[in-house]
Length: 213
Image (cartoon, rainbow, N blue to C red; front, side):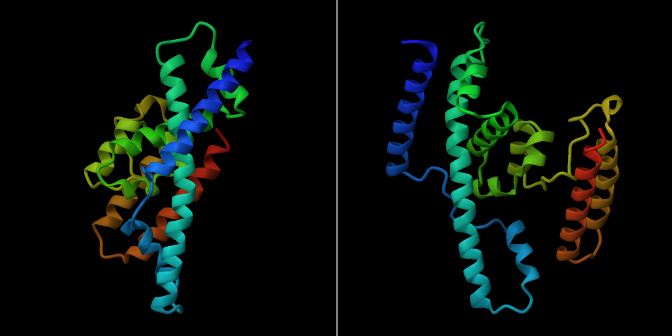
């Protein structure tokens, strides 16, 4: 049996194990939306309470479907990573496996990190607050510690120790500026829905700036 056939067999075995686990328990299922996400429903000003409750329910179902798939994939990818890459592989087995599975390295890193963060979270619903921007900027320990400590974690809120001052890129310099602005907003009486909109706009600006780095 050649290398490619061995990897395919391994993936099939993992898939079977994954399917059995899903039948036995919903390890990754989220029970309710975090408050930070519920606040975003303030945009529905003309809808009835019944309609908003329906939207919240369907949103939770949608997010659960998305997150479960990502976390299951992250679990599988991490399993292969731990076996072949964590100790170093002279044959580049992990990289070859990712190519075989048609998963690019950046996606693999994001899925692995999300799975590892989920394991460390005390309040599992907080996994819904983590997007790709956060995964790209912070490491697993920083994200999990901030969330478990009840701190805000978004692209604007960051630890100064995470990035050394002499390595700041254009977007990271603006990140510093926006972080100060967010702290000032949090200490003011600005309504939460306005704060949320401002943070979203700042994240959009950071996205644009990254294209010039």
